[in-house]
Length: 463
Image (cartoon, rainbow, N blue to C red):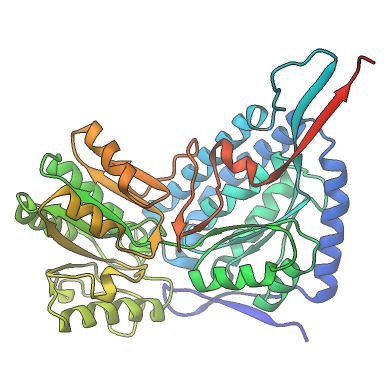
């Protein structure tokens, strides 16, 4: 019996969409079609692959008017911010298309008389993309476009919470006339996802999600000799030095903490501020936070939507409550945000002080609109606290001293270090993490390395 998945909207708790999961026969057919299509696709000139991918990007952008409210219904993103996801989608997709000729070009060692030597980049085969709901277009496109550009076929398994996003991807490739079988969207159970990974019929799986789910992916891949790329979240820190531009730091760190209701792997979840400016920073941070409007994400006035589920909001509420019992102070009164109703997915932003690293809210990923702020006496103390985490995705340093930022960045255990900005993926730079934030690389030229294999040619033409 084929199971079904219901998409429960965080807006009002009702069923927004319902779909049947793929069964074993459909999965087998999809894998066979992907393999057959890829055998022909890899022979296509890169310019032809780029034309198909560019047409798909154009088709996605043409759907903006429908996609923006659809995102709000699926995962709660306010409509006033929905178009931003598509701008990021376009930026990443077009960048990866543009750099493909250089990234995929053969490497030529120093010439040796009588020999033709080079290292070519060969496609892997079929790439499985397991995408999350929180940035459903951005995270998926990180792999989909470069995988196709590199000559692979792609199977997308999107989160059930954003299952309509997978259908959008399938539609745009259909409109772009991509050869049949090259891109397929499958609605899969966890069991069937694991079976595909273990089947030997996909050569790479790229997953974005929780640490526990990442462990499940790795377990399914054991012994299969396939590539595994994992982006597993973070507890991203920020350090505000005494010489920082205070207004700029406050404005950007409030946004970095609460955009998307804090539901971002690279959201700012803990802030360390030089003790000399700590009181002023906290005062301004709280004042700006109070300007958020919590409410229905379909309302243009809303700047803070619901969390994805009531249970997600309950987890953050429990973190806050636990911190308060351990001595933290909450600087935001939830009563100032009438939409914050206990038991619902709607949760007011919260700023905590007098926090310590013994509290869950400073150690475990919150994935919600809460941030803890601590004062520090020195750079060394800030670095020690920033590194005191099982995660290592990104960190930001707020200062007017470029040399100091680079020096401190060398000491921080993260995949990305920002100066005077946060919560942003530059498609020209590698997106990667350390520790429990995962393994592998997407974006940049290095992103193509995980979607291809090296093949050496050693050709002796003078005998």
